[in-house]
Each structure stands twice: as structure tokens, then as C-alpha cells.
Figure (tube, rainbow, N blue to C red):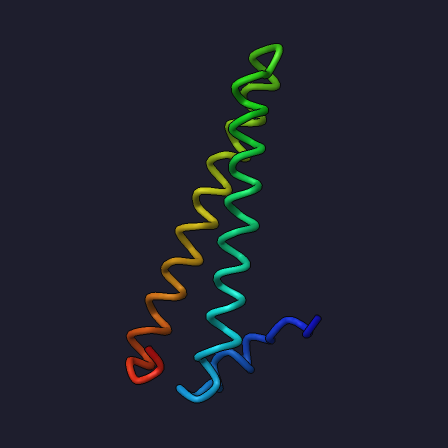
Length: 85
């Protein structure tokens, strides 16, 4: 498995760098966040009390926010490097 990109590496990327590896990373990130979301929704639905339900709800909200952030990063990269599409 490759190491994570640093902020400096992401900022220095050119269209040539963006295509396959970064697309695969975003796909993997969205899959992982989807799994977290599904588990959190299950925990929320089966929570035995309000406190547990509240904690699970926070995880659901955070997973949805993280998915939105990943989508926004992907959109920004797409607009910065339209030729990488």
C-alpha cells in the first residue's frame, strides 16, 4: 500500500498525476465512508437508549460530512485539472 499524499504533494500535482491513483483513492475513500455510514445507521436504529442513539447519530452526521468533503475535493480537482477527466 502506498503512503498518504502530503498537502504539499497534492498542491504540486499536475493533470498527469491526478488521473488513476487519485481517482482510485477517492473511490476507496467513498467506499470506506459508505461502510462507516451503514454501520452507524444500523447502530442508530438498534440503539437501546437515547444516549447511544445520539452518539450513533453524531457518527452518521460526521460520515455524511466526510463524504461531502471528499466530493468537494474531487470537484475542485476536476475543475483545476479538467484535462484529467
